Every structure is written in C-alpha cells, then in structure tokens.
Image (cartoon, rainbow, N blue to C red; front, side):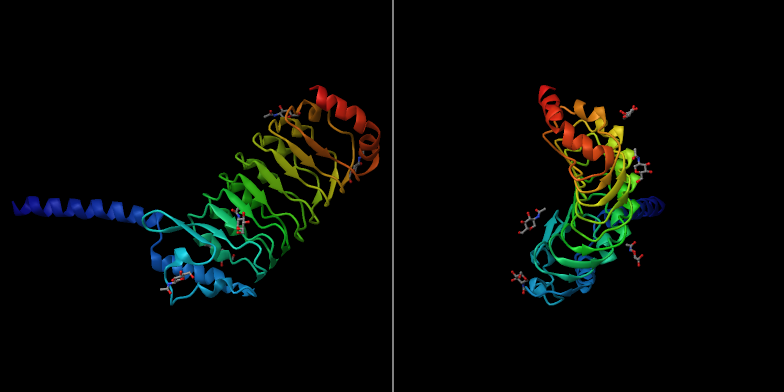
Length: 275
Ligand SMILES: *[C@@H]1O[C@H](CO)[C@@H](O)[C@H](O)[C@H]1NC(C)=O
Ligand SMILES: *[C@@H]1O[C@H](CO)[C@@H](O)[C@H](O)[C@H]1NC(C)=O
Ligand SMILES: *[C@@H]1O[C@H](CO)[C@@H](O)[C@H](O)[C@H]1NC(C)=O
Ligand SMILES: *[C@@H]1O[C@H](CO)[C@@H](O)[C@H](O)[C@H]1NC(C)=O
Ligand SMILES: *[C@@H]1O[C@H](CO)[C@@H](O)[C@H](O)[C@H]1NC(C)=O
C-alpha cells in the first residue's frame, strides 16, 4: 500500500511538473509582465504627454496601463499601442520578452535607433507598426520569421540598406509599407511569394533595377506604389494579369521605365480596366 502511494505520489509530481512547466512556457506571471514592461519603458527617454504616468511599480495592474492590452486568465500582454504620443528614445529589445504580443504599434513618434532584430522572436505578432519615426539602420532580415504578420508598416523612417528577401516568407502579409525611407537595391523577387499581399507601398526610396516579373504572382495585389525611386527596365507584362489591382503608381523613375510610364499610362490603364 505504502509502495503504491509512493508510486502515485511520484506520478502526480511528474504530471504536475509537466503541466506547470508547460504553463510557465506559454504564460508569464504578473510580476514578470510588470518587470518586462518597466524595462521596455526605460528606453523611451522623453514622454511629454506623460502616458507612462500609470506605468509604475506602485500600480501593478499593468493591464490598465496606458497602451497595454491584455487577454486570458493569467492576463497576458497581447497588445502595446503607444502610437502618436510624441515619445523619444529607442525601441527596447526587451519588447521581445512580451512573447504573447499580437499587436505592436509605436507609429508616429520620434523614436530613433534601430529596429531590434530580436522582435523577430514574437511569432504571434500580427501587426507591427513602426512607421513615421526616425528609426535608422537596416530592415532586420530576421523579421522574415514573423510568419503570423498581416500588417508590416515601417515606412517614413530613416531606414537604409536593401529590402531583405526573407520578407517573402511572410506568407500571411496583407500590407507591406516601406515607403519614404532610404532603401536601396532591387525589389526582391521573393515578393512574388506574398500571395495575400494587397498593399505594396515602396514609393520614395532609392530602389533600383527592374520590377521583378514575380510581382505577377501577388494575385491579391490592390495597390502597388513604387514612384520616386531609381527603378529601370520595362513594366512587366505580368502586372497586367493582376485582376484586383486598382492603384499603380510608378511615376518618377528612370530610363525606359520612366518613358514607359509616361507614354503608356493611358494604354496601360485601358488594359488594366479591360482585364
Ligand atoms: C492604476 O492605473 C490605472 C490607469 O491609470 C488606474 O485606473 C488605476 O486606478 C490605478 N490603480 C491603482 C491601485 O493606483
Ligand atoms: C493605436 O491607437 C491609436 C490612437 O488611439 C489608434 O488611432 C490606432 O488605430 C491604434 N492602432 C491599432 C493598430 O489599433
Ligand atoms: C535582444 O537583443 C539584445 C541585444 O542584442 C540582448 O541583449 C537581449 O538579451 C535580447 N533579448 C532577448 C529576449 O533575446
Ligand atoms: C538598371 O539599373 C541597374 C542598376 O542601377 C543597371 O545595372 C542596369 O544596367 C540598368 N538596366 C537598364 C535596362 O537600364
Ligand atoms: C512566379 O513568377 C515567376 C515569373 O513570372 C514564375 O516563373 C514562377 O513560376 C512563379 N512562381 C509561383 C510560385 O507561382
């Protein structure tokens, strides 16, 4: 009997170990969430609207803090929206510790510094909005592992370097906003893998080379703007097979593309409406 109890006890211990270690893996406790959020707060150096007033160790109801959105029994942080509140400073890499985050919106502030590459570990992220700041450096190729992303808007920043081909792995992407930066190099062919993409916004950069034919594989495309770049070559015929395309702006580019856009705009429009 005692032997059986011992075995039962060991079994229960094993079960609870498996169960709780699993729970710990998916959920962060309240104290941990408070700690991470306060760490994230540290990198925002100026807060003229005092939105971080509520973010304090004295007030541990973090789900009621400005811009914090929670879900679940063990309130997990699923959203962080601190858009348009004039924040300065940088984006803390500690944001990557909020592993249940679905929405991150830090758009329209005065944030500087890089996009932390380890944001790419937030695999539940569905919207990443960092547009209209002064973020610099490259687009981290690691962002290609955020396969739940539907909206990626990081334009109107000081970003340089090329558009990583890895963004072609974002198979759920509906909106890709990279306009008004200093991005150079080609439009990667991998863009053609984004079959759910509706809005591709690349205008006002320093992109060069031809528009890849693979763009014709983006069958959901509604809006494609790549005006004010250094793109050359011809307009791929494949663009004409995009039946959902409503807005195409390729103005102010180079060479043949420039002439093609000017000369054939009318013809192209007719073709577009005919298909
Ligand atoms: C914590 O902050 C929230 C949001 O500002 C506020 O509604 C709440 O009353 C505060 N709780 C305490 C205990 O101060
Ligand atoms: C974030 O908050 C702002 C201001 O309240 C709002 O306009 C914006 O739509 C929110 N962002 C998202 C992605 O819901
Ligand atoms: C994120 O990156 C920074 C800088 O590379 C590093 O210090 C930090 O430990 C990383 N955080 C996570 C959660 O990986
Ligand atoms: C287009 O531009 C690229 C790089 O800027 C250049 O190498 C290539 O020769 C150009 N092609 C045409 C057809 O002008
Ligand atoms: C994408 O487009 C290219 C060139 O138009 C074509 O050769 C290729 O088969 C397409 N890929 C897919 C996956 O549809």
